[in-house]
Length: 81
Image (tube, helix red, strand yellow):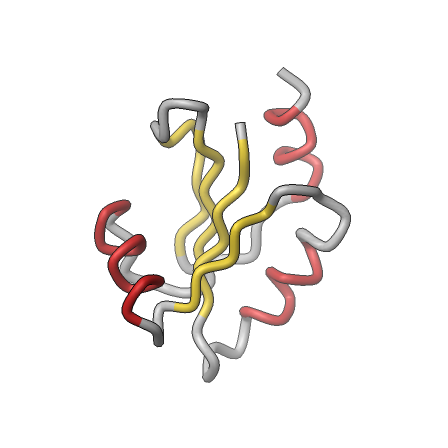
């Protein structure tokens, strides 16, 4: 499993989301202000920033936080599975 974080430059909660994920390896950050980030966000149905997804090896969403700062303890728990 890995973590996908969707951010935007003018997002007021994005710095807090980045901070919450600072201790995790393999966090993919997607800027929805860029075409690649917007395409990935569209694929996952992301409509708000910050959004964080935990996805399995097949790319299927296991859990997500849309428009809010993620819970690091829950992420740690999911990644340990």
